[in-house]
Amino acid sequence: MTWINPQFLVETDWLAVHLDDPALRVLECTTILHPRPEGGYRAESGRATWAAGHIPRSGFADLTDDLSDRASSLLYMMPTDEQMATVMARLGVGEGTRVVLYDRAVNMWAARVWWMLRAVGFDDAAVLNGGWKKWTVEGRSTSTEPCAYPPARFVARPRPELFVGKREVLAGLGERATCVLNALSEEQHRGTEGVTYGRPGRIAGSANVPARSLVDPRTHAYLPADTLRARFSAAGVLEAERVITYCGGGIAASSDAFVLALLGHDRVAVYDASLSEWAADSSLPMERG
Image (cartoon, rainbow, N blue to C red; front, top):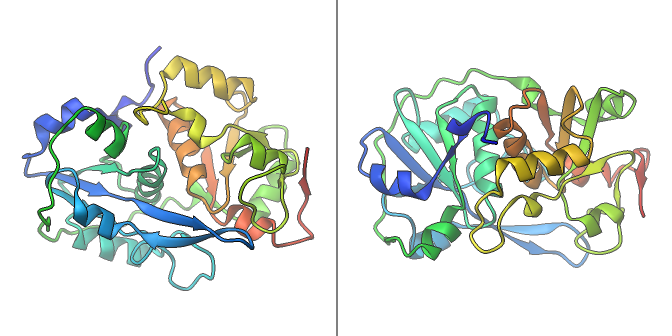
């Protein structure tokens, strides 16, 4: 079986051939997370890591400093349409450009930016399969040269249904047609170990397909389409009319959502605040075990 939407994913061979395409914008999206003893993470921009060596001609999309809602106390909430358009235009993304996104963390940050772009109506973006890991495992060239694409004109065409809040999640828990899906590890899902966000465990009644289980651990490339379809199907995800993905803060959840889009599921939303909000509110149902 192949992907239903293969245009959402590009391979390293393709990118190597097209790096000099004047309409192409390659953006690294890496962010570095440091677990906090009290739960959650401290976030650090990956800009310095990018500057020390990156895919040639790639720019840097900074989720920590530029592409998060500046008015929110939570990490990595979707920014306003205006903020998103301003930052993307500055990065050279806009009408007439094609974007390839990559990171150094099993494609999760690239998938997050891909989902954000989709949420503001930009559809000519793809994730680099395997990202930096596969690129370097294959021995491809890297660069420390800074990259600055010419500014572009970016017009946001919002699709607000691609992100949801806790009310929609609560409503979905009571609907047989909706699957609420946790993208964290099995241990975090069970509440037995790993980083927590206040209360350990999962949203009551949710299924689990860990984002890290979607990739080959050696190359970080996504597993074959038929393998991933079987994995999501076994969790009861593909049979649902609607899927809401979540994790700790909407990042791993975006990777699950991205793969579901690759597989052709067209009714998927990300719970943006995820457990950073849910676990902190004792009135919202959670379970362990």
